[in-house]
Length: 341
Image (cartoon, one colour):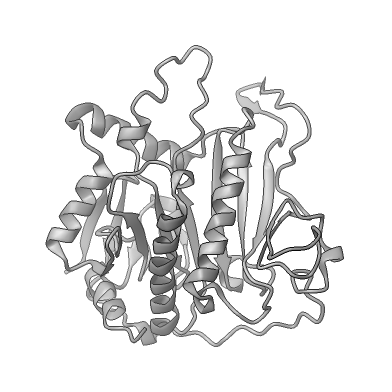
């Protein structure tokens, strides 16, 4: 029989349609072609992008072709840095200027390597770029949240085949982040514990949804997974802010990320996916809210969410807010645990 499962962090219901019992091979799709003849992210094409903001290279001048990771402004940004917010009312509506930042992290100079193909050392370079850009953007008091995400594959929203991530800074808290932050704060206020730490402890004790455990990280399939083979990667020790990670911690995280991405690639034959890095917002004090972030360091827990794009959102999902998952998280975890990596 199917089950309705409640996600206590995202505050929504999911239908686990166990009678459908879809296995990895049921989701396999044909590889996507790459018709691009001149990729702006490849070596030698640095002049085809905006000037870089940040790069990791052994030596040399900025915008030269000897980089390992390169960060550039998005050529067609959703939001722009220049200007003032001008938050205002419009009848019953609210409107503000499109102020923010939109950056692209080019993860490798090799056009044909995905993030799963990179070595842990190369992934550590990418994570170092993530950390550097978080630390820089949060200095701007106009920005209230940073969303770092990766779209892998055309069905996941990637417009360029060359492996890259994106970072968008926005001048308000997005609804997803606001919900998670509120849940974490309320749970801590009641129990004086982190809800994520309690979740991790339960899943490690239970074991059936754990895909891989490392010394300081764990990868698992959420109990109320919205999508088949959905994954979350958590630091086992409490930490609210990804940007506070040191180099040694980033190196271990890179190993855990390599393992997660490679399992998804091998089990699902390089299926398209999105991953999102959820971390604490900048702790800027807000006028009139002196206790706004008073327990954030204790109640929130940063994590990475990976969602393979194997099903489509249709009328039922739009009309109800429920998601139908045809593969149980327990089965997904078993398939991923048994993967040859």
